Image (cartoon, rainbow, N blue to C red; front, side, top):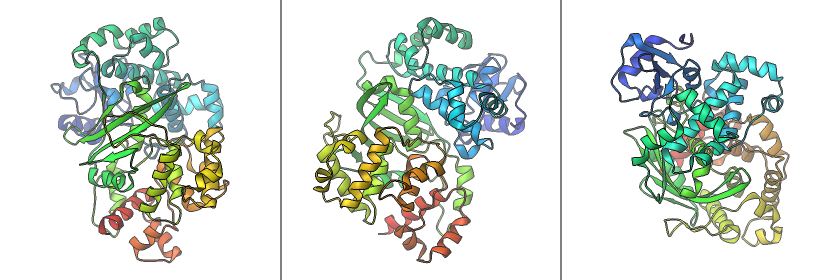
Length: 489
């Protein structure tokens, strides 16, 4: 149970004493007297310092023999973005494993290594060096934590929980759960039964983040771009329809989101039909609301902007990569309001109806397959010019046939090159698509008119020179400059 050398024990102890949410997801404490590991924000009685072992990941804590706390629930802690890791390849592998678990898939390590362009042996070596456990152990931890969340937050039968978290059989699931957590899945379900309604009208989940969290800026951004029929923003609450591809089926439903600032959590109510994809939904929400961002790294860089400080600014991501990319294309050379109007027309013409608790939300954003199959004439009748119709359909075809993948955390440069190879997609569009769908924190759409206005200059060299001082968080600088411009209008 040796403590990882990369974690400062004195700092970790101070964070635990203060229950400092800024360290949530960055450290976990294992208590030797109980055999349990917790998040630093756990509200149980503070353990003795001598009994504490500190870890920088849940996988390390479990590898050392600790089991997760049932009260603070380590599976809800914020994760780490790619900017946090010096070994980006190992971090990319971890993201791929997470994505596979969330989608209910079983990733093969040789195939994973091939996707990253390295050998299986090399991947295992750098993975252990970065994460302290091998990829299979990491995969087991992620599967069991997802299962624990499904058992705690949904009424799914245990057999379905086992399959949804990637176990090939109920027997193997029960054995792994008991071996790692020292209680059976059915016992965990019984312990939390009082919190589960017999016939839930909504699935409620909570997702942690590190403070501060600039909710007014984020919800304001969403409000100014909200599409009638698909989205609704009201009093810093966001609701929308959505489609999730889980396994071989599309799950269609809705969700409502609000921020619990006191607990540093995003509170989500979702359609019960989405319960089988809870892991995938949680990951998409973490991406869409940038819950894994670390303001302690980002805010000092944004302080260099010629603007008043706004701590905790987030980078709005995506719940649907095609939707965001399509809206970027529709926003070429037009205002935010005009782009929203074109997107709403696309929804009215090609979006399928959906039932939600809100009368204002009645349709889904069209799928890539639907737009790929439409005739250019049908799209053109919506007032979308021919060049953008061509770009929109080329994008839809590439996503529908799998030749292009817009995955959060993917390396930006290859995706940008693929995007710019499509007709009608230039550097401005490619940069914004990478920013919103990949979560790329250093995008810089230098030809953006809004940036010119916010910075008071049309000299590209001058603007690019300024932006050099905002690396590696130029995407956040874009959001901050846009916010200043849009709220001043």
